[in-house]
Length: 171
Image (cartoon, rainbow, N blue to C red; front, side, top):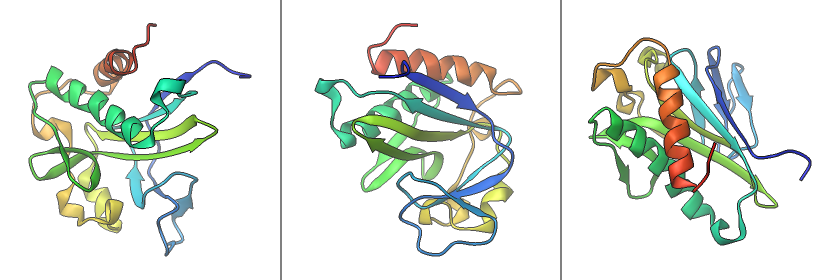
């Protein structure tokens, strides 16, 4: 209750983060308090950190994960790209390739961490480890499936639009 809800949109310098599910850490990996395994963050990737108190009617972590996926599906649809969910795997996929990874943390129904949408990301960076426990070849980026302007601004605007839609919020 000390702060209002926040939606942080960032582009990281190259870094590998590892969630609580990762058993083995490499020297270049940064442990974080989210769920999930190792994932890469870097230039060309939009990382979204919702920090918010989930309202009483939305206090279901599986629903929250599906809602984050829905935000990304809405963004992809704006580019006429069909994204999808895969049973048993959190995140968003284009065909058989993963375009968005999700890893969250929640304490007392306050969320932090979030999702990473590969927009112009250098996919070679994923080859250093198995992102989300998957083969690195499974990763894709949005600009491989549609024309998209340089930078992340358009995707940032669309993430805010669809986040507000999915979570019934207003700017």
